[in-house]
Image 1 (cartoon, rainbow, N blue to C red):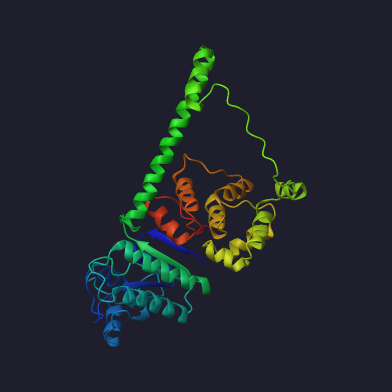
Image 2 (cartoon, one colour):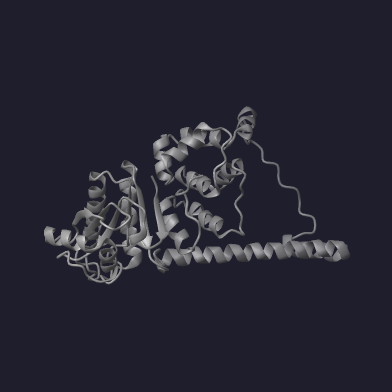
Length: 347
């Protein structure tokens, strides 16, 4: 099952378990810890008192009491001291211990906050990187729905450099798209009113009014026309299964890397006429590590095209062009840009 980033109140999540960042004494504190205890009722504090304590990087589990969740997994994250005190290892341990407890108690879904990124001062982008790393490794071998719950607007979960690089790429693509639209409109207008001016305008744009024909390339291999026609007639499902075989992947490797549920994958693979949503089609292209041209071809089989008027499409294009195929990293950026996430959908 997939990993999903959501904006919500974690105490209202309809999941098997929520994670509560607390202190070593398990004494109800402030912030999210206080909110969880308030929503769960006084029985939760009694249960924590009976347990007595929890070490940094460790986790314990209690019932959820009045919460929608069946369980509360309490964990003690590290306080940030500049990264020199083993904070990353301790934070990694928090996520690992919580997921192990959730699995041991047969949880199908668990909701995490961004542990230690509040009053404990852990940088949000670095805390996010740890959450993504541990979750992706766990999901590759386990079947669970993991939510990362962000309350309100949290800026720069993504590293500032990556965020800036993607923003610059978006700006460049938008500018280029706007320039081409204006150029084409101007060219058409001139051809309608002044042929000589239109030819001069095109000469400035292209170097000559009448560009020479493309050179004939000799020695290029003849296409396999039977394969060309076969691939032209195949639907999305057939193309997907063919590409999985060509990449030497298993179905499980594909849907895990795509961050989609295996039931959705089965639905796609068993129905030749199935047309997935665009985020799902993109997710599968990312899982297969397709080039931009290959991604465009796969999307066309689902009835879509990559559009430079869509911020979602531009962001995914950026990652494909840079051969960065980690879907969790892509979703992290999409979340920061308020775009739909890839893979964690039902179609």
